[in-house]
Every structure is written in C-alpha cells, then in structure tokens.
Image (cartoon, rainbow over all chains, first blue to last red; front, side, top):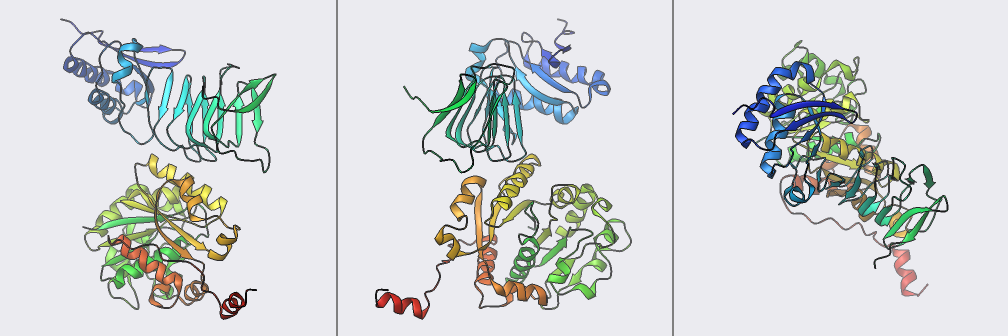
Length: 215
Length: 263
C-alpha cells in the first residue's frame, strides 16, 4: 500500500494546513509524518499549522505525540486541531495539557482551562468558553459567543467577524471593555458589581447587560 | 537536592531585593548553604542591602564571560559563613548575559549550594527572562496595591508560558489597620485575582527601612513583626506547616481604657 498522500501540506486563506490521512494505521501515519517533515522542514520551520486529523479516532496520547513531533522535533507551531466529523470526535477529544490550552470540543468552540491573565490574548474564530477568570488586561476575541465560568474583569470581544447576535456571558461580568461585533462599551466609573451571572448583547444598536436568564 | 528560586514581581519597589536578602539570611540561619544571585545587572542593590558593597571584586558578568572563576566572584557574608552573594555588574546592562548563560550558571552553582535565590529585576524584558531561565520555581512579591497586583498577574502569565508552574505569593507591606478600615486591599482580594498559593504576608514595618539602610537583613532582629513574618516564610520554604501569624493590632492602653469606660 502506498502512503504518499497520507500527510499533505495545504495552503489556504486561513493558513497552512497539515492534513493527516484517517485511513492508514496510526503507526504508519507517524512514520510518514516524520518522513514528510524531514523533507520539508527547512521550508516550513517556524510555520504555524492547523492539523486536520480527518475522521480518525484520536486518543489523548495521539494528540500528545503528534504535537510533540510537529513542535518539538521539527520546530513548527501547532495553531489548532481540526477534524472532519464533529459528532464522532467530540466525545473523545482531549488535548495535551500544555499550560496555555484548550481543546476543541467541536471545531467551533475553544475551551480554555485556566485563568486568562493580564497580557494574554485568546483569539478564536468560533466561540470561546473559559473555565477560569479573565483578569484585567487580558483579552478574549471570538467570532462567536464568549462564555466565562468565572469573573470577567478584562476585555471581551464577541462576534468579532461581524456577528451582531453574539453574546458575552459571565458568572460575574465586570469587564473593563466589552465589544460585540463593532459596537464597544466601556465599564462605567464606579459602577455597581452585581453578585449574579450576567449576559451582554446588542439591543437597538447598543451593548446592554442583562441578568442571565437561567430558564 | 538544591533548589533555585527566583523572586520576581513585575512592578518595581515592592520589596524583591529585601525579600531575597531576608529569605536568604533566614535560610542560612536555618543551617542551609545559600547563594544569593543579583540578576539586576546595571542597577545592583542586593550587595548594598546585604552590607557587602565594598567587598565586590568580580561580578556575575565576569563569571559568564570567563574573566574569573565562580568561586572568586562569590562573596561570603559577614555574619553567616554559609551565606554567599554573587553580585551583579554595575557598568553593564541586561543584554550582557543570555538566558542560556544563566541556566549554565545556576547548574554550576547547584553543586555547592542547598538554595540559590535569584533577585529578578523589575519589568518583563531581557532581565526578567535571564532571571527565570535557570530557576526551578518562583516566588512572586506584591504589595496591596491594584497596580502591583496587575503586574503580578502579568508575571504569573509569563511564568506559565515559560512552563514554570505553581508560583507562590508573598504579600509585602500590608497595613492591618488600613485593611480593617477598608482602605487597603485585603489578602483575599489579591488571592481571588491571582489564584495562586499564599506563602506569606509581611506587615509594613519601620525596622525594614533601618535594616536595609544599615545593610543588615531584618531577620537577624528578633523583635520586629516583619522579621517574624520572614522567618515563618523560611520555615514554609523548608517544608514546615506554619500558620499565618495574626496581624491584629494590639490595642493601646488608651484604647482599652476607652473601652472600659464605654467611650
């Protein structure tokens, strides 16, 4: 069996894709990946890649080792994971536990398992869910909604690609700046800090903050 | 097993150097062999705080550039023979040393010392990167000010990015009276934002100013509350479980009299 096309680089508008065949054996895939990277390393070193694993059933260990090969051995930068079939892979996917990350539940949602701290910026074309606080000076930019299961004290920009129906929801919404699509709202000086979850959305061309409706 | 600990903060003037001097002296008092490394090249202070300024012959840059051996540059403390200082160069700047050189330096020093404390410069640039390069873990010093806490948060983020997890927090210069009145951030507010473990709390104390100016670390002095707090932190670093000391203000005689008379 020939595996020449098992590992393919593709350039798209979104960036460089590394497409991994989902039919061949995992071990064969890894060998082929190494070969491919040896051939192309001089050209792609330092490049940011999105890795597509097709319909392969990826286990956490697979993510770890592929990520290690790409990043540590050959010096590419892994931007994110991508898969073709959402339903099947959604359950299984867990990401390497590198400090700053994140797993793709479905490709649209980015989950951040930590406090986002001052100076850190998380950008994602889909929705973003953080399981920690967003501290002052931190920035989250999402094409879709932003949900923060903690205190939001930083800057949140939902619907960054122009989606005016995007939401920012937080367990405690105390953002210094909120932006939905291209409408910006700044925190009032000395405003009250309610002790309940809130949601921000656009109404009549303005960002409004409402009590989260938990129905 | 030797341990390399970097003391950092982001913001300047929160007490990094004072903390290094006191923790280092405290660890030496506890019988450990300790080296203090001043990584604040171009703005060296640790030698002054330790009272060792006029004993400097060689410095950190001389060691990394191979002008002298490590042992020649290490200055033995006046008071404790198991305490050493590696001073920073004053005539150079942060770019005179690289993270790789600092890593090598820390590796070389590990063989001779139980603890190596690195005094990190303020800021997040080259000096910071150098200081954390060879460290196993970090202690973050902050004061109860919004700006200092903001900077500490930034530093914790950068340490995470450098894969140095689990830094510990020291809150310096707290004034219990002001906290009680609600005029100063309290410890819980800071822990809430920074979400890291607390290593200790140092109260504001005039003794520190005096001891810093004299070049005698405050831990040597039994009376002051700050020195007590530093000694507690030393014990925690050594693995003991020491409760936070009470910072309740003792009531003056007048206050007590007032209470008796219901005033």
